[in-house]
Length: 303
Image (cartoon, rainbow, N blue to C red; front, side):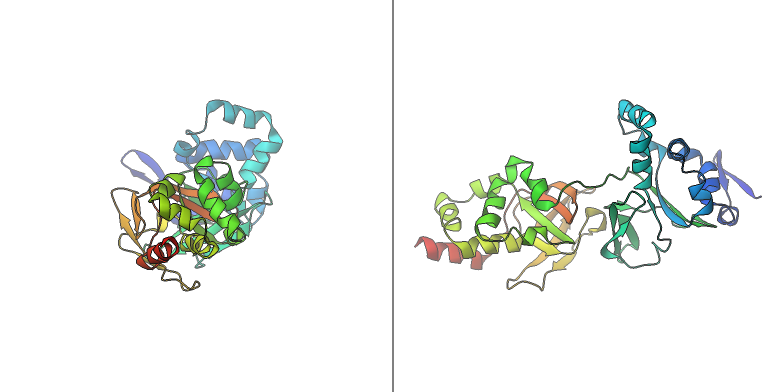
């Protein structure tokens, strides 16, 4: 067995890791000991020794963000612990070799994760989290490290937004115009404007918007994109084009510092990003997309 010492850290050669089982490889890593111990506590050690799986492994630093009492409760409740660990295991072993476009893959917890591949930076994400160390192939599958713990989303986009009163006007526009079903489609991105974005419009334009089914429908369509765009896949000056609507819906991403973004022609920034739902992802924005054509339509209604 070849062993390398780099800056005081103990690393195992890639060839040696490839000859190991998943469980043996997990046990050899100093930085994923917490998750490895959870696997053992859940009684899944033999599974990862004999079966063929891809395992998404949160690092120790990721698990340290969990409250201590939550980890303690998991150790005491084997059923919940096993469900948590199983959500990080999928029977599909060709994750990195596939160019995912938002498809769901079922986990051993019988709840799916969503995968997206971004060709511009050659990364694959699971529920928005970037897969790291894709060279950790083992004899019976693959291991990828994560900087966060995966948690299954519990609600779709509409249900998620309904839990926060700040999005009531956007949801009202969707409900009145018959567009709620649009927000329930799978593999979509919703740029959800706060109520404050509506409040910042002139009062007569706000009144005109909510008196026109056509305008309400348009405002919802402007804020829904096909495909799942997590911010981990954004890049500066990226153009996102939606060819599936009747409207000119070309958006441009602007990076404003580390992991801070604005999307034009929306007014304002992304304030709450990567809000994962069962049917896609939500980014809360502080402004509406109001094109000149849209504003002219409002003014015609007003005038």
